[in-house]
Length: 346
Image (tube, rainbow, N blue to C red):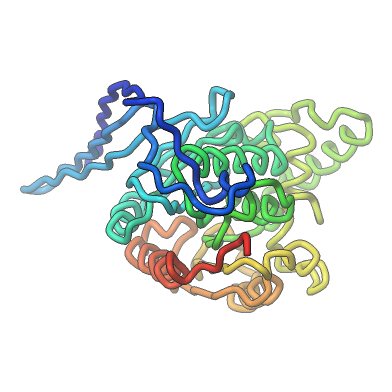
Protein backbone atom coordinates (compact mmCIF):
# COMPACT_ATOMS: atom_id res chain seq x y z
CA UNK A 1 0.00 0.00 0.00
CA UNK A 2 1.29 3.44 -0.91
CA UNK A 3 0.32 6.56 0.99
CA UNK A 4 0.68 10.03 -0.53
CA UNK A 5 0.23 13.33 1.28
CA UNK A 6 -0.50 16.44 -0.74
CA UNK A 7 -1.08 19.89 0.75
CA UNK A 8 -2.12 23.24 -0.69
CA UNK A 9 -1.87 26.44 1.32
CA UNK A 10 -3.40 29.85 0.72
CA UNK A 11 -2.67 32.92 2.81
CA UNK A 12 -5.68 34.55 4.38
CA UNK A 13 -5.95 38.01 5.87
CA UNK A 14 -8.18 39.58 8.53
CA UNK A 15 -11.53 40.71 7.22
CA UNK A 16 -11.84 43.55 9.68
CA UNK A 17 -10.48 45.20 12.80
CA UNK A 18 -13.11 43.88 15.21
CA UNK A 19 -11.63 42.05 18.18
CA UNK A 20 -13.32 39.59 20.46
CA UNK A 21 -12.80 38.54 24.04
CA UNK A 22 -13.19 35.09 25.52
CA UNK A 23 -14.41 34.19 29.00
CA UNK A 24 -10.79 34.08 30.21
CA UNK A 25 -9.60 37.33 28.64
CA UNK A 26 -12.68 39.01 30.07
CA UNK A 27 -11.63 37.97 33.56
CA UNK A 28 -8.06 39.09 32.95
CA UNK A 29 -9.29 42.51 31.87
CA UNK A 30 -11.61 42.80 34.84
CA UNK A 31 -14.91 42.43 33.03
CA UNK A 32 -17.77 40.55 34.66
CA UNK A 33 -19.39 39.02 31.57
CA UNK A 34 -18.37 37.28 28.37
CA UNK A 35 -18.17 39.02 25.06
CA UNK A 36 -20.77 37.89 22.54
CA UNK A 37 -19.12 39.33 19.44
CA UNK A 38 -18.50 37.28 16.31
CA UNK A 39 -15.74 34.66 16.20
CA UNK A 40 -12.34 36.12 15.31
CA UNK A 41 -10.69 35.63 11.96
CA UNK A 42 -7.42 33.73 12.23
CA UNK A 43 -4.66 35.69 10.49
CA UNK A 44 -2.78 32.63 9.41
CA UNK A 45 -2.39 30.18 6.58
CA UNK A 46 -5.25 27.84 5.81
CA UNK A 47 -4.30 24.35 4.75
CA UNK A 48 -6.09 21.42 3.17
CA UNK A 49 -4.33 18.08 3.54
CA UNK A 50 -5.43 15.29 1.23
CA UNK A 51 -4.45 11.77 2.27
CA UNK A 52 -4.86 9.29 -0.56
CA UNK A 53 -4.56 5.55 -0.07
CA UNK A 54 -4.64 3.10 -2.95
CA UNK A 55 -4.57 -0.64 -2.96
CA UNK A 56 -6.36 -3.62 -4.43
CA UNK A 57 -9.10 -2.81 -6.89
CA UNK A 58 -10.37 0.33 -5.20
CA UNK A 59 -9.18 3.56 -3.67
CA UNK A 60 -10.36 6.09 -1.14
CA UNK A 61 -9.54 9.66 -0.36
CA UNK A 62 -9.65 11.37 2.98
CA UNK A 63 -9.26 15.04 3.78
CA UNK A 64 -8.47 17.10 6.85
CA UNK A 65 -9.30 20.77 6.53
CA UNK A 66 -8.23 23.35 9.05
CA UNK A 67 -6.09 26.35 9.92
CA UNK A 68 -2.33 26.45 10.36
CA UNK A 69 -1.36 29.25 12.73
CA UNK A 70 1.51 30.57 14.83
CA UNK A 71 0.91 30.77 18.57
CA UNK A 72 4.36 32.07 19.53
CA UNK A 73 7.36 33.86 18.12
CA UNK A 74 9.72 30.88 17.81
CA UNK A 75 9.95 29.11 14.41
CA UNK A 76 8.63 25.81 15.78
CA UNK A 77 5.62 27.36 17.47
CA UNK A 78 2.90 26.58 14.97
CA UNK A 79 -0.26 24.52 15.33
CA UNK A 80 -2.85 22.92 13.06
CA UNK A 81 -6.52 23.19 14.06
CA UNK A 82 -9.40 21.23 12.58
CA UNK A 83 -12.92 22.40 13.31
CA UNK A 84 -13.92 25.92 14.28
CA UNK A 85 -15.40 25.59 17.74
CA UNK A 86 -14.94 27.32 21.09
CA UNK A 87 -13.76 24.14 22.83
CA UNK A 88 -10.60 22.36 21.81
CA UNK A 89 -8.81 19.08 22.42
CA UNK A 90 -5.05 19.74 22.32
CA UNK A 91 -2.94 16.74 21.30
CA UNK A 92 0.58 16.52 22.73
CA UNK A 93 2.71 13.78 21.23
CA UNK A 94 5.71 11.89 22.54
CA UNK A 95 9.40 11.80 21.65
CA UNK A 96 10.01 12.32 17.88
CA UNK A 97 6.31 13.11 17.31
CA UNK A 98 4.90 16.02 15.34
CA UNK A 99 1.78 16.46 13.22
CA UNK A 100 -0.41 13.38 12.59
CA UNK A 101 1.64 11.51 15.17
CA UNK A 102 -0.76 8.60 15.68
CA UNK A 103 -3.17 6.81 13.37
CA UNK A 104 -6.17 7.77 15.48
CA UNK A 105 -5.60 11.51 14.89
CA UNK A 106 -7.56 11.71 11.63
CA UNK A 107 -10.68 9.79 12.75
CA UNK A 108 -10.53 11.59 16.09
CA UNK A 109 -10.57 15.00 14.42
CA UNK A 110 -13.65 13.99 12.42
CA UNK A 111 -15.42 12.60 15.50
CA UNK A 112 -14.64 15.74 17.49
CA UNK A 113 -16.00 17.98 14.75
CA UNK A 114 -19.21 15.94 14.77
CA UNK A 115 -19.49 16.80 18.47
CA UNK A 116 -18.62 20.50 18.06
CA UNK A 117 -15.04 20.28 19.29
CA UNK A 118 -11.84 21.31 17.53
CA UNK A 119 -8.62 19.30 17.52
CA UNK A 120 -5.39 21.27 17.84
CA UNK A 121 -2.03 19.69 17.01
CA UNK A 122 0.77 22.02 18.15
CA UNK A 123 4.42 21.78 17.32
CA UNK A 124 6.62 22.55 20.32
CA UNK A 125 10.34 23.25 20.37
CA UNK A 126 10.65 19.62 21.52
CA UNK A 127 8.73 18.16 18.56
CA UNK A 128 10.40 15.76 16.15
CA UNK A 129 14.13 15.65 17.10
CA UNK A 130 13.94 18.73 19.33
CA UNK A 131 13.19 16.75 22.49
CA UNK A 132 16.86 16.12 23.24
CA UNK A 133 17.66 19.80 23.72
CA UNK A 134 14.39 20.75 25.41
CA UNK A 135 12.74 20.02 28.77
CA UNK A 136 9.37 19.60 30.45
CA UNK A 137 9.73 23.14 31.75
CA UNK A 138 10.12 24.56 28.22
CA UNK A 139 7.22 22.46 26.97
CA UNK A 140 5.02 23.78 29.78
CA UNK A 141 5.78 27.39 28.86
CA UNK A 142 4.87 26.72 25.22
CA UNK A 143 1.67 24.87 26.15
CA UNK A 144 0.67 27.92 28.17
CA UNK A 145 1.40 30.16 25.17
CA UNK A 146 -0.77 27.95 22.98
CA UNK A 147 -3.71 27.98 25.39
CA UNK A 148 -3.35 31.75 25.76
CA UNK A 149 -3.59 32.07 21.98
CA UNK A 150 -6.71 29.90 21.87
CA UNK A 151 -8.32 31.95 24.63
CA UNK A 152 -7.54 35.37 23.20
CA UNK A 153 -7.76 34.62 19.47
CA UNK A 154 -10.14 31.67 19.16
CA UNK A 155 -12.61 32.62 21.94
CA UNK A 156 -11.85 29.35 23.70
CA UNK A 157 -14.18 28.21 26.44
CA UNK A 158 -11.61 25.75 27.76
CA UNK A 159 -9.47 22.87 26.54
CA UNK A 160 -8.93 19.17 27.11
CA UNK A 161 -5.28 18.11 26.98
CA UNK A 162 -4.66 14.75 25.29
CA UNK A 163 -1.17 13.35 25.80
CA UNK A 164 0.42 10.43 23.99
CA UNK A 165 3.48 8.73 25.54
CA UNK A 166 5.94 11.39 26.78
CA UNK A 167 3.25 13.98 26.04
CA UNK A 168 1.64 12.64 29.23
CA UNK A 169 4.64 13.89 31.20
CA UNK A 170 4.21 17.29 29.57
CA UNK A 171 0.63 17.47 30.78
CA UNK A 172 1.37 16.34 34.33
CA UNK A 173 4.22 18.83 34.61
CA UNK A 174 2.18 21.66 33.07
CA UNK A 175 -0.68 21.16 35.51
CA UNK A 176 1.77 21.41 38.40
CA UNK A 177 3.20 24.75 37.28
CA UNK A 178 -0.02 26.72 37.87
CA UNK A 179 0.89 28.90 34.91
CA UNK A 180 -1.62 31.56 33.92
CA UNK A 181 -3.74 29.49 31.54
CA UNK A 182 -3.64 26.14 33.34
CA UNK A 183 -7.05 26.87 34.87
CA UNK A 184 -8.49 26.76 31.36
CA UNK A 185 -7.71 23.00 31.27
CA UNK A 186 -11.03 21.32 31.94
CA UNK A 187 -9.91 17.75 31.50
CA UNK A 188 -6.90 15.56 30.78
CA UNK A 189 -6.49 12.31 28.83
CA UNK A 190 -3.26 10.35 29.28
CA UNK A 191 -2.80 7.80 26.48
CA UNK A 192 0.15 5.44 27.02
CA UNK A 193 1.63 7.00 30.17
CA UNK A 194 4.64 4.71 30.36
CA UNK A 195 8.11 4.94 31.84
CA UNK A 196 10.90 6.09 29.54
CA UNK A 197 13.33 5.08 32.28
CA UNK A 198 12.12 1.49 32.49
CA UNK A 199 12.18 1.06 28.72
CA UNK A 200 15.65 2.57 28.34
CA UNK A 201 16.92 0.39 31.16
CA UNK A 202 16.52 -2.53 28.74
CA UNK A 203 19.19 -0.99 26.46
CA UNK A 204 22.79 -2.07 27.10
CA UNK A 205 24.36 1.39 26.92
CA UNK A 206 22.00 3.05 29.40
CA UNK A 207 23.85 2.51 32.74
CA UNK A 208 27.11 3.91 31.35
CA UNK A 209 25.34 6.87 29.77
CA UNK A 210 23.46 7.68 32.99
CA UNK A 211 26.78 7.83 34.86
CA UNK A 212 28.21 10.11 32.18
CA UNK A 213 25.17 12.39 32.24
CA UNK A 214 25.34 12.66 36.04
CA UNK A 215 29.04 13.59 35.88
CA UNK A 216 28.45 16.19 33.18
CA UNK A 217 25.68 17.74 35.25
CA UNK A 218 27.87 17.83 38.36
CA UNK A 219 30.62 19.47 36.27
CA UNK A 220 28.26 22.24 35.22
CA UNK A 221 27.75 20.86 31.70
CA UNK A 222 24.06 19.97 31.90
CA UNK A 223 23.23 21.63 28.58
CA UNK A 224 26.11 20.08 26.64
CA UNK A 225 25.44 17.19 24.28
CA UNK A 226 25.93 13.54 25.14
CA UNK A 227 27.82 11.16 22.80
CA UNK A 228 25.91 9.94 19.76
CA UNK A 229 25.39 6.46 21.24
CA UNK A 230 23.30 7.94 24.07
CA UNK A 231 20.38 8.45 21.67
CA UNK A 232 20.24 7.30 18.07
CA UNK A 233 17.24 9.47 17.23
CA UNK A 234 18.32 12.97 18.24
CA UNK A 235 21.09 15.07 19.82
CA UNK A 236 20.47 15.01 23.55
CA UNK A 237 21.84 17.05 26.44
CA UNK A 238 23.13 15.59 29.67
CA UNK A 239 20.15 17.08 31.53
CA UNK A 240 17.49 15.67 29.20
CA UNK A 241 19.10 12.24 29.12
CA UNK A 242 19.30 12.16 32.91
CA UNK A 243 15.71 13.41 33.16
CA UNK A 244 14.46 10.57 30.95
CA UNK A 245 16.70 7.74 32.12
CA UNK A 246 17.67 8.25 35.76
CA UNK A 247 15.71 7.11 38.82
CA UNK A 248 13.51 10.01 39.98
CA UNK A 249 14.60 12.17 37.05
CA UNK A 250 12.20 14.95 36.12
CA UNK A 251 10.53 12.73 33.48
CA UNK A 252 10.26 9.71 35.79
CA UNK A 253 6.53 9.76 36.60
CA UNK A 254 5.05 6.42 35.60
CA UNK A 255 7.63 3.80 36.61
CA UNK A 256 6.35 0.60 38.20
CA UNK A 257 9.05 0.60 40.90
CA UNK A 258 8.08 3.98 42.36
CA UNK A 259 6.47 3.74 45.78
CA UNK A 260 2.92 4.87 46.48
CA UNK A 261 4.28 8.01 48.16
CA UNK A 262 6.56 8.76 45.21
CA UNK A 263 3.70 8.37 42.76
CA UNK A 264 1.47 10.63 44.83
CA UNK A 265 4.27 13.18 45.03
CA UNK A 266 4.56 13.22 41.24
CA UNK A 267 0.91 12.80 40.25
CA UNK A 268 -1.23 13.79 43.23
CA UNK A 269 -1.80 17.38 42.10
CA UNK A 270 -3.88 16.01 39.21
CA UNK A 271 -6.67 14.97 41.60
CA UNK A 272 -8.57 18.24 41.03
CA UNK A 273 -8.70 17.77 37.24
CA UNK A 274 -11.01 15.25 35.51
CA UNK A 275 -8.63 12.64 34.11
CA UNK A 276 -8.82 9.57 31.91
CA UNK A 277 -5.97 7.06 31.58
CA UNK A 278 -5.94 4.98 28.39
CA UNK A 279 -3.47 2.14 28.85
CA UNK A 280 -2.41 -0.28 26.11
CA UNK A 281 -2.20 -3.76 27.58
CA UNK A 282 0.29 -4.90 24.92
CA UNK A 283 2.41 -1.73 24.97
CA UNK A 284 5.77 -2.66 23.47
CA UNK A 285 7.56 0.03 25.50
CA UNK A 286 6.58 -1.51 28.83
CA UNK A 287 9.05 -4.24 29.88
CA UNK A 288 7.60 -7.74 30.09
CA UNK A 289 8.27 -8.00 33.82
CA UNK A 290 5.88 -5.13 34.57
CA UNK A 291 2.38 -6.08 35.73
CA UNK A 292 0.43 -3.69 33.52
CA UNK A 293 -2.91 -4.13 35.29
CA UNK A 294 -1.35 -3.40 38.67
CA UNK A 295 0.56 -0.43 37.27
CA UNK A 296 -2.43 1.28 35.71
CA UNK A 297 -4.42 0.80 38.92
CA UNK A 298 -1.63 2.42 40.92
CA UNK A 299 -1.33 5.31 38.47
CA UNK A 300 -5.07 6.00 38.56
CA UNK A 301 -5.06 6.02 42.38
CA UNK A 302 -2.08 8.38 42.50
CA UNK A 303 -3.83 10.68 40.02
CA UNK A 304 -6.67 11.01 42.51
CA UNK A 305 -9.07 8.44 41.11
CA UNK A 306 -8.60 8.86 37.35
CA UNK A 307 -10.87 6.92 35.01
CA UNK A 308 -9.19 3.77 33.71
CA UNK A 309 -9.52 2.49 30.15
CA UNK A 310 -7.60 -0.73 29.45
CA UNK A 311 -7.31 -1.61 25.75
CA UNK A 312 -6.54 -5.30 25.37
CA UNK A 313 -3.86 -6.12 22.80
CA UNK A 314 -3.41 -2.44 22.08
CA UNK A 315 0.08 -1.33 21.10
CA UNK A 316 1.81 1.85 22.27
CA UNK A 317 0.24 4.19 19.71
CA UNK A 318 -2.99 2.18 19.39
CA UNK A 319 -2.45 1.86 15.64
CA UNK A 320 -4.05 -1.59 15.94
CA UNK A 321 -6.99 -0.31 18.03
CA UNK A 322 -7.85 3.01 16.38
CA UNK A 323 -11.62 2.73 16.78
CA UNK A 324 -11.37 1.87 20.47
CA UNK A 325 -9.06 4.82 21.05
CA UNK A 326 -11.43 7.27 19.37
CA UNK A 327 -14.50 5.91 21.18
CA UNK A 328 -12.80 6.20 24.58
CA UNK A 329 -11.65 9.77 23.95
CA UNK A 330 -14.99 10.93 22.57
CA UNK A 331 -16.85 9.29 25.45
CA UNK A 332 -14.77 11.25 27.95
CA UNK A 333 -15.05 14.55 26.08
CA UNK A 334 -18.83 14.27 25.61
CA UNK A 335 -19.43 13.20 29.20
CA UNK A 336 -17.35 15.96 30.75
CA UNK A 337 -18.30 18.75 28.39
CA UNK A 338 -19.46 21.12 27.27
CA UNK A 339 -22.43 21.27 29.65
CA UNK A 340 -20.79 18.92 32.12
CA UNK A 341 -17.77 21.11 32.81
CA UNK A 342 -17.53 23.11 35.99
CA UNK A 343 -16.48 26.71 35.44
CA UNK A 344 -12.78 26.70 36.42
CA UNK A 345 -13.07 30.33 37.52
CA UNK A 346 -15.94 29.83 39.97
